[in-house]
Length: 346
Ligand SMILES: Nc1ncnc2c1ncn2[C@@H]1O[C@H](COP(=O)(O)OP(=O)(O)OP(=O)(O)O)[C@@H](O)[C@H]1O
Image (cartoon, rainbow, N blue to C red; front, side, top):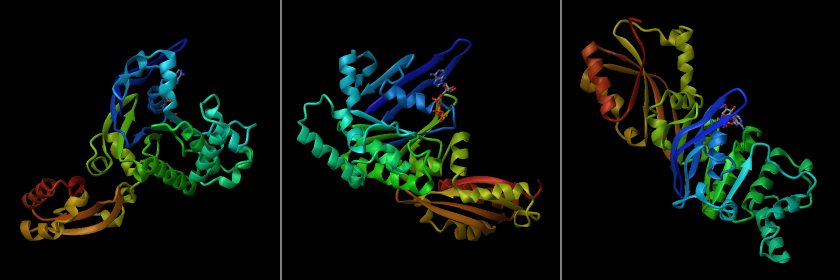
């Protein structure tokens, strides 16, 4: 388990102090694929580099399996670092060495025999699907292939944790997907905990089970991926979620005064977000019967996150003020997020 306790990191330059991480408290369980999302400059890279002390926190603790590694001597720290692999946006491969040599490099000075190293490298190449490229040089590989080599190299020392610093940001969507699939395989087959930083919610959605949202050095929200997607609290989280949901087209339509969102007296436009549990209730049809409101679906979207359905609906509600207020309260009672997008009088 990784715990960050009250982690602060301030960079002091000639003319200013930058507080890159402010009082960060996080707990990452063994086996998690933990995402850290934030815009550029939010402090994600600094935070993830604090986990293996590539950056030393200005204050606070970094506990790995209960041990505060900021207090360890250099030799002890080196041992811990071997158990924390890392991959980067720009791969950081050694250009003058072959794929095979890149992967074997971290095993230099290990107790393994040459034959054992050879087996290990070949097994890793097979795991990342690049067995035929063992004698190629990095310049002869695509971006996705380079990242596969970097993953194999990061796994050479049998780490317990793999830190991924924007590992897919330089890759096209299809290659991103294949690398994320590989990371998931690494997590499931080898039981390696993955900490992944990104500025793309689509990446988080595809493989993470937990997420922390960072803004200006602070963690503004953290939780299970489905809870975060179905009931986000921080504005920053909502912005990230909206960035991957086609339903947010509605905001553009409202801004442009499109016909489809024009309201008449007694109408109200709502956005409803609901998780798997809530979909079991036929709530929309019940509402109409119970509260004498008309509820028309304007459009909707359902996506599957961590094998659970998450729905969003844009609905037009029509009825008396009292009836609509009660209908909205009923929706909230069933744990459905209700956002009033527009009322007839404004
Ligand atoms: N070595 C450094 N010296 C001074 N300031 C730094 C240093 N490293 C990072 N910073 C500053 O710390 C803040 C957080 O940077 P960081 O790279 O952690 O953010 P990020 O969320 O990873 O952004 P990006 O996605 O653009 O890499 C930024 O304002 C950055 O300029």
